[in-house]
Image 1 (cartoon, each protein chain N blue to C red):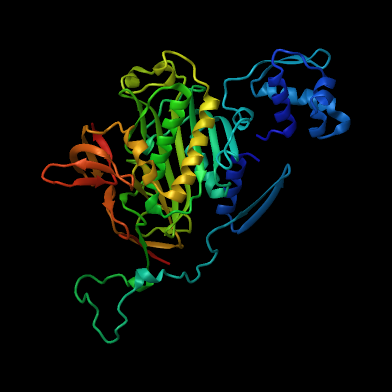
Image 2: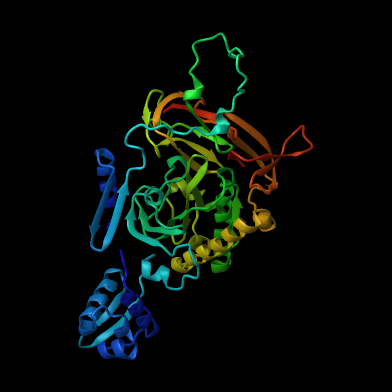
Length: 151
Length: 337
């Protein structure tokens, strides 16, 4: 089975309501399974990223300012490496994602470049992009927050 | 495309008997091809068909069923049969995808990686319609003159350790070129290869990261092997192995096999012993060493200094004014040197 045919099949599954497709062609069997959950489910949030003091009764740290996003309900995507943050595959190209956009598991969020290594950071949970925390082409540190996603 | 065991064996026998005509019975019985034929009752048919398959691959084979067959010339192409025969690696290139023409090996590699092809899969193309450098800088890659390839790796390392893979790949290309041609290429941090002051090869790495885990790495490399001349716009900055060897043609298949061999050895060493081991041999091939350089580190910031080698994390060491310590630059591009 050639790659173009495979690509077509993958697109077919992507754009359809079906979650799974298995085809056999000339002795080659291919099974394509949608990676994202079909319906929104509860997505576990990595504990470390939401470690906040559990002291009850304390007032919220930021009392003033615009109504902040309730971060306990958001997924914080942090940088797994030191690098440069790029929102698009090349200068002038449309960004991978925008605020307010729906994203699915496996979707590319940004590129992190380190030593000519282009790393595609892929979405780990489906949701809506609520905030993009870094400007395009800026250096980022390990652990720095990049995106806030509402599942 | 898939190549049968029968065709593989047939090429081997024809090569070993170059310029001699071998008839049906000599091939099937004398050289044992019968054993690997699909249908033992129709071996003769298999043979004629296999010869046609080889001819389509570019092998010049004279003869027919009555006269027997004789190999005249092996094609100068990076075809499946040639790459596979004589490959010494255990996993790099063992799953092999060859293309006559492809959009870009990295794009297809990415798709195959997502589809779950085995660790060490190799894509090779004779021609890239859209050869890509970094951030889609186009790379001059006329058909049949170079090696344009991408390896799919699934190393169990953390994303922050990925940077050294490109450096390692460039270093291994250096070693392979030295062995094959006697030339002494140098390595320009982080992953370009130079002969004199002209670039002849480059490495482009890409990876997919999800939930802090490396899903795959695409190690793409391009080597200008037998390009005889370059367009004026790049002739001052680009070269090929052939130009650097006074016009002598370099065997691409054997160079590719050497690159894979060195890279597999290096990759295993890197995973078990770490990167420091390679440093002495990389330092002596450092193109930037002791040069005044400017590095753009992202966000519009630049650092100027004198290049003083590479550290154990693969970072470029810079001697900067007003500091007694060398500054390690892990991220950036050398914009002036």
